[in-house]
Image 1 (cartoon, rainbow, N blue to C red):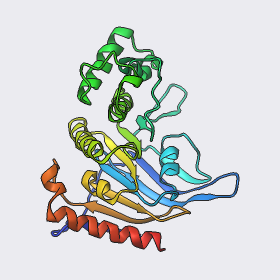
Image 2: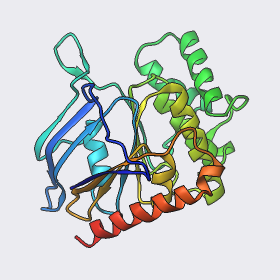
Image 3: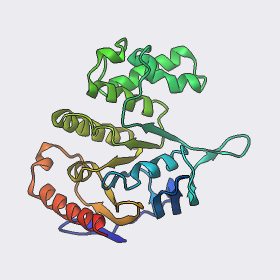
Image 4: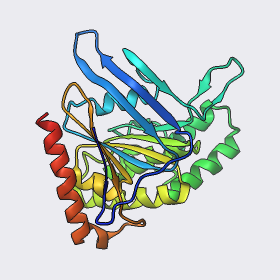
Length: 271
């Protein structure tokens, strides 16, 4: 596996804190015999923006769902070294999840959809409404609290989904290709808004994508995965400063980084 810093002035990546998530020798084989993920080792650090980059079918989403506890590894371990535990001693995963589709409840308003995790946690209605409204404002949907999903554009629905994922203020937000179905203009705008939100809230972001350009623009770190069975082929630090904007997206540095990551992805696909 390659570990490198994508920079004209490379510097070592140093993370002395315990990771939020520690993945050790994780493999996943489904009942039909398909080996989706093989022997993955990763540490997910606090405050990082990490992209899982690879072709369709390389196990990115499978790995993300296992991190979320929505599936179990066939072998290996996924630990949360810095997590808290409930009264029974069970670890409480402090995370939010944004799926490929917004998965909004059609009978609930934008406010009602964002309130749902708070309601399930037993938060009082008045407090839940206030916190959900605050989160909708953070994702740029102030004034749309009473709108139903059918009244919102695709990009606006995804903003509601992100707000719902963040309303409990998790330490880690897992995102499974949330912008893949959107047009390029909307996708660029949501990339910008997501980075601004991440910069303000300082959660750890794990973002699944098959776009080299999106991964370089968003990420502090890119994990390149090979096709099935999914394996980590490269772990790259993107040494470009934040905040990032249109000037970065059109810069020679960005083009250079995209070429390097594209080369690593080509190597992974051919492995």
